[in-house]
Length: 289
Image 1 (tube, one colour):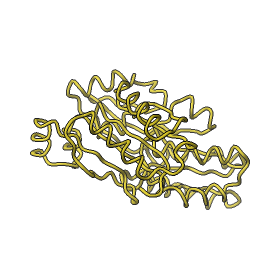
Image 2: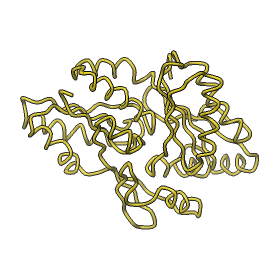
Image 3: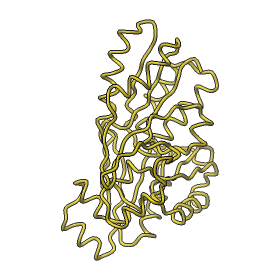
């Protein structure tokens, strides 16, 4: 690469994938039961199964941005070493992470005028952000220059399709996505929402179905509707400690859509704090979101 590629831990890449892509992942912060943790992609500070077990037991985690100083500490060594930096950030439609990083980048750009310090708003979340980073890294690894990678990102970020479903409506209620009454009634009736991320990078409820299996099938239905050349593209499936459901969706994507390059990994604690255990998400490139 002729530049350094960074992202943050809401990308929900596996540690093996991050290493393969030569991507530096900045850990973001969450807290649970009064204790603060940094979310590294290998979940070194708190086992991911233990985290979701705590949520199932009624714990309510909190998420927070890292400080401007921590962004500076992540960016500046690369600039000092004579490298340009591209940081692909968590969607500005969900978090203020992008804005904080952009402020730091502006300061650093004045201090290192011969270098390029770019903070790029992914307008994506979880494996959607991860898949965008994946494609950018693959381009860079073939020797494509920074401007070519940026042009690809501009052309494709709102074609990076996200489809989610959650298992427990109470987590959406806590995040202000649905009312308490809707969570109560929906839980009693077995209603499962299907959500996506829109062109402004916001998580939007799209439909309600009855039953978990039908909700999982709807994710694949939506992929069939909009996926571009699915047989030859890379697909990410991320899950909040529900591997059996992830494997079910993988099987359906292979059988119904024809995709073969499919990667499964966890939804990390930052996204999981707002969506809860049992969240299942499907990510791919489509004609539109």
